[in-house]
Image 1 (cartoon, rainbow, N blue to C red):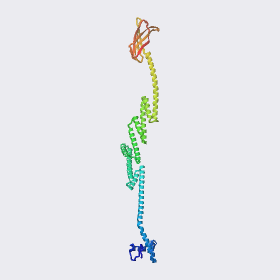
Image 2 (image 1 turned 90 degrees about the vertical axis):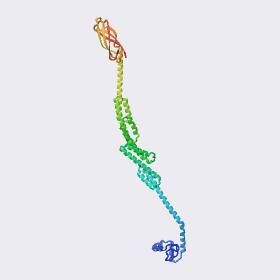
Image 3 (image 1 turned 45 degrees about the vertical axis):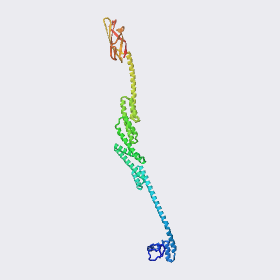
Image 4 (image 1 turned 60 degrees about the horizontal axis):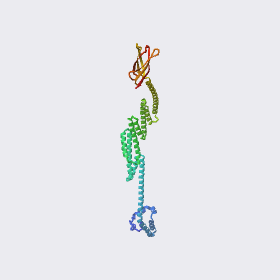
Length: 417
């Protein structure tokens, strides 16, 4: 019998090979169990040994040479195999780490995209997954802090919006102020959405405060100032407040212009309507009122012109009267005495519109047939007479000798005061 490993001849009862030290009993048991299938898979050296046992030929030197060559390969083959194994392990480790880095970057990008879209919970889930995979990745940790801050700000702004819905303007204003303080210095794009939400709430707050302030305003000047504020707010609510302010300006202006129209203060009334129409150009109430004011003003001016002309005419007539007919005869009484002298007593009145003084009267006496039987000149007394007051003069005409006589005031002179 020979050792199947080194080909050294051995005894039948040997357990180990005397040359290579291999266990021989186990090999024999394996040979018995393997059968024909093991024989088909034997190595070249085993086949040679079997052939030697069957044929009795000695080919051991050739097998021994091959065994020695095989043993000489292992000293350099083992390190090579170890190097290959290490290289393969490093390759797979590098590939795994590279894939892991790519996955972390992918999760980070997805988290950022979700945050930009306003899906902060989803963004935090992805960023936390990335942080779990790479705990030392500072950029991911920074993104988590930013998204957490943005999510908290969104909750603050949402709470402020809820307070506005409940008409809690003071609380909402305080919450928005706190959010604004936290936003100071934050220029990252992810804050843009919450900034827009905050601005929307701020505009709504300003509009609601403006609506409350309108309740106490009663003048166009005050309303105009608030209208400028409303025009600076860009929202549907602000547009509604603008319409409300304009409507109040129209009502106040209409009432004021009507009152001025009743007082015939047409210029100021038109000024009020013109100002109001600057806010509501096509308002039918104001345009109709403006036409009424203009018509009333035209009618008034026409009547004033007529009154002026009449006054001028009357003044001219009065002046003429003052100049030519200021002295009016009220009554004349005559008495003829036994000597044929006619005693005259006359009552006159100042018919002028101004006082007169130094009044001198010239008169003529006629008999029953109309013949002049005497004349004279007299000074009226008192010397200064107010409009409408009376004066008188007394005189005697001698040599009349006529019972039935008539005294006619021919001319009077006076001075106007």
